Image (cartoon, rainbow, N blue to C red):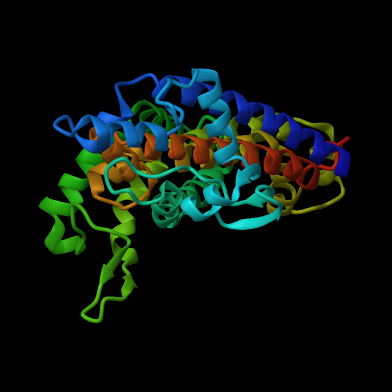
Length: 354
């Protein structure tokens, strides 16, 4: 088990290195960061200082090679790093550092600072992350709570109107783009029927009270969570149905019936458990995608999460924020895929982790 986890983590590190390389050379090639930070009308001295701060030029004003810039960036975002004492103080790095003038350390990744607000990118994204996690969890809970029972029902009632209705609904759910469904749901339930539903087109997951404290407002979570949960719900329904149909034809199911077990016990205790592997793949994969891909839904409903922050950053050419959000999304993908592999062995004893 430990060897397996270590091996998967090493694979994950390699994937992250690939993502970091792609993100750096993609976004670092756009425009002049010094002009974006200081503005087009800024003086040359200000721009020169910014280029030095961003590791674009050295102390003599000479341009630093792109590959060396990449190594500086990799050292900044890596938890294992080497930094000078001046860098640690200047960047307000948080972690454990040992050594003399150049220190070896374990730190919270430094994603640099926003071009527009000058705030640390890590702080910006961590402030938005709870909203995205909350939205993704709510959407996946809706998808699982409805999709698995619906898929089981469709398999047990194969070729009946229940089965046909479930298949038709799932096809519609898979085909409908999230941004389109978001607009329709927001307009119908947040505008036309707002007097009946009490819901609004847009709203954040918190409000600021008179004393300046945040107060949770889960009412605004309903519409974006339903919108985001439609496609995974449809896929989970289809996968559960097809997997259950395969399992229900197995010999051990007929043996369970022959032993006198009730239909409900056979279906839910024996059939469903052995049919869950592809469903777990869908749930974990979609949860990671929901964390990373709620951009349009958050933007449509004004939900303050990483997706909305990233779209706003793209509009303002705030590339450090965009780069940081992509890296955090990639890290979630890797961790959740490892979790999915571990869940296989727990749910289905036939799967052995080596």
